[in-house]
Image (cartoon, rainbow, N blue to C red):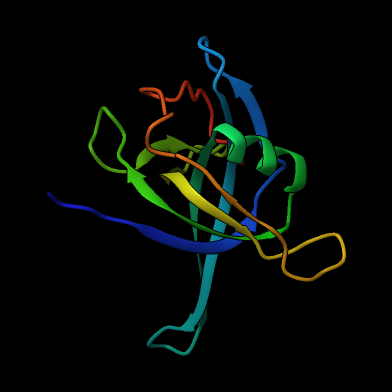
Length: 143
């Protein structure tokens, strides 16, 4: 048996969006941006941002939808889900026509690192794996 897990920490790109599958399971989607800055070989500052599209399922989806807002910090532990067409990240074009990619993660645990009071928040845990439907029904990247 093989296994993988991803841990990402970043900021929400916009408010979460919750929906229900035809069989009544709650699913909440939100985007998380991670970034790093470094100086390239010529001394220029480079900012690199990677977007992750996260899905939370069941009770965890309801908790994330209720408490998370754009700009808040979260830590997500989950599994990477490849694009069914390419086997890699989801490839798309920005509004200006430039290419972009996002990585999709099905959350097992979401830890709220920001709260209304500014401190660390709750942990939302869920079955992530068992409740996820095939394909997820995503039409657009939310950023």
